[in-house]
Image (cartoon, rainbow, N blue to C red):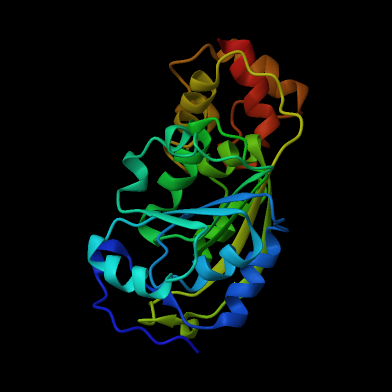
Length: 265
């Protein structure tokens, strides 16, 4: 079991893993090879960073808490294939940061701070970088929202947007007792594998806005949430899938939203 001699900061969502076996299991999900580059956010006490470094060519880690610099330097001593950038990942230019690296495949593997899980995923999408796989430890309820299917109460706009880009798989459960300090929630490891073929979209930004508007008021129907759009065109598309304007967004697969966006643009 890993021990940490650091002052944990709640504002950065710092909960460090302490079990090497859990770390190895997370890293194994990614199926990494020696010629790969891995991006990690929130290395914390470097328990996962060190395991990643054993398996790949390079690890690029982002850490917002500069007070951890001494701890990370100590723990990563003698490991030459890890670079730590002490900066806010959400404000970073990932494409520019990885330009100097040569690698076969690009991965994202991280026990991310839970309060920025969704912004991190959206950042990865916006980067337009081709990640072979994204493996993230997330809050259990959030992981269920990401990996659920339409018709489920956890299904929302983020589910639709992620499903457009990735095949999503809930890998395994991790108890809150595996962290220091122990958080108030359990966790789950989720993997995101980029779809080899994405459905054609005329305008992704419009698709994203349409999806968010569709879920604006969760209990309202498409007729109400999209009343400012062309309802005749919406009805025409919905009828193809045997729905009416009185359907709720949570019942619609991401493919229906793609069809709606292409017709409405």
